[in-house]
Amino acid sequence: RVVDMPDMAQPRGKQYWRRGLTGCWYTPVSGIWQSVYLESVPVDSPMITRVHVTPDVDKGTATIAVSLDRAPAEPLSITFGLDMTVEDGMTPNRPTLFTASMKEREASFTADMRGAAHDDPFAGVRFWSPEHPDLYGLTVEIGGDRVHTYFGMRKIEARDSETFLNNTPLRQRLVLDQGYWPKSNLTAPSDDALKSDIEWTLRFGFNGARKHQKIESPRWYYWADKLGLLVWGELPSAYVFTPSSTRALMRTMEEFIDRDYNHPCVITWTPLNESWGVPQILTDSRQQAFARQMYELCQSLDGTRLVSGNDGWEQVLTDVFALHDYAQDGGELREHMADRETINRVGMCGKAAWADGAIPDDDIPFLLTEYGGTAFDNKGAQGEMGGMATWGYGTKISGEEAFLARFAKIQRSVYATPFCKGACYTQLTDVMQEINGLLSPQREPKVDPERFAKLNRGEGIEQAG
Image (cartoon, rainbow, N blue to C red; front, side, top):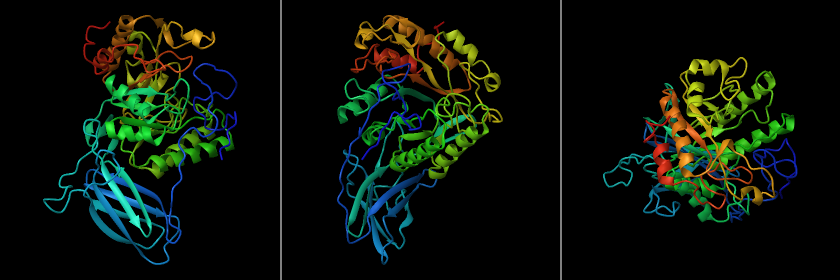
């Protein structure tokens, strides 16, 4: 059963806690809005409850952690089938088999992905990246239970003011993706709709998405894995700081990481956004302690990914220096990002960059993780909203040429900032009253994706004002 209330202590993301719509908050979705399924399990032997795979790109190995619902009465043989995935991404093809003995409820095993023989399909590890989203299928069998999953050999780290993917410097071109649809709200109308959104994202020249304030359907992460899209996994926010809100946020974050641990597309966890749910974090030591606790929770459950502690501003503890700025004038944005030391001291977008007592570390990469958000003059959109005022950032733009001219100037400022190692554009689609998407709610492009993609990659921005 699902209990859903208009409760500000409940992690709810962009679902408004009152009737109607306001600002950037949308119609709430009650009940079960993701897929539910039944699974047959053995009754006379332990059941596999979890398979987590942790890749080690540097050593060429993968550690397979298996959990059972109970300890076996006697040691059980556990069999692993491992191979490059076939088209459906799940069923191993000509698997390499190895066996081990499992004596306790939880155990870990390490597979050498480099292969032991010349004809082994793993001779030479295939790494996962947006350019080459190679996946390995995995079958685990013990007693009467068998599960199929997959994983990717992928490494993400932040050091020396850079982000590295598989030990190669990475510039992130992200898009803010809310994951709403016109009639079904948070529920995708089909699996093809999930896949199509990722295809649009790639077509606009992005190599990643910040799935904003939503834990998406596992099929969306699957298509990101298959098509090669980097993902920031973000916890939906609560909007008050209470014992019940902190417990709910911690539990949801833990379940989020547990469920989506094996997806190579996910490179960053975001437990807090713009101080939502921790409104006094700038000066309140308890709220700062909670932010540190959420950061450490993510790191303790998954040390393979980065954590953006409080994305946007008022950072406490973080692996990336992630700030937001919606300046619509290229020159104004350039002034805001003129000097990293000044940003450390005064922040951006009218907000402090760091909470009191937090010591910034210039070795962590700086990313502009929300920018753009340019409002389009969508004819008829206000009528569709029942007369409610539509909004976005800046003076509304009419037409493709005016939009691309403004975007080119903004992009020039982003690329001209040497310490800025990536950015996240707001946003992929219009959502209800918010009309700053590159696509309409029906997924119709408002600008030429190819022209936008060139500017997104920094091409042709030299002459922009």
